[in-house]
Image (cartoon, rainbow, N blue to C red):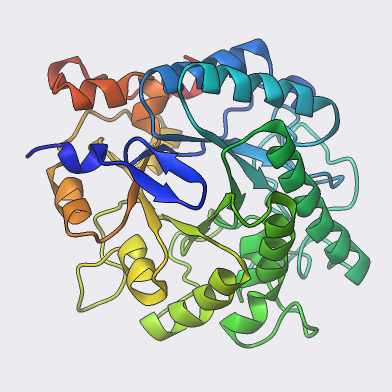
Length: 365
């Protein structure tokens, strides 16, 4: 199948991508003390040289005492900002576009177990998983300061020259913890029985980020149904519930929904072949990004168990893209293993594509 659909330009707000390929955000933990190094800069520059349409950085945390769960996860405030400026300049010099993913892990403390957070852990209800209480719920002051922290990081991204901004609202981290009734048991305005009620924190974060970046800069929001705490968890059981979830976020200022699945080809609801990104686009009318085991024959969670993956056909993905099921395609492990994956796909050099190995996660190539 022709790959032409992958290499059509795409425009949203002031952002014009030369192709439909996005580098998915992937936590790398190569920033000691939260400060990106020269190796981090070179890592992103190589992906720009390789032809990625838009690079979304690894998750970078906002200014809250326990926003990260690993001392080598980068921050997006203070002393780290001049180093992120170097990343932006290097990517732009290579002809690329880049967005930071801004993040708060909440009560998800799975990584960096030897590292202790610098302050109180933020969590909607103190739950680390359904029925597993460990921390104190966030106070109104905590909630307000966290929302402002997202806004400050967004403003910094704009000032540093980033081309767009992505908010991490997926995978069981803080914003997703507010969405999920399994861990949001609050009885105030930040919780409630409906998805719309529990979306309020995410809506206020989106508003703060939009204020920070202005109206012309593209704002992306990454979402997922599954959680690291429970792969079978779902926010929306039906299309109507998905509309109730996504509509207020769209109205608050989201331009693009980044719809995370473990396997992009799996249908979201019975009775339709549409995946998560396809349904979000159909229901809300905003552009969407699909993601999940693109270009490889094994899904990414298996990589943490040491499994590798081999290159896989893109025909099914391209067919969906040609039908306008979604607008953009995020690629993770294939780009982690090979910064020139996009170039090889465009040139039809399939024999040169690399396998993904577990060791690729332990280096910055």
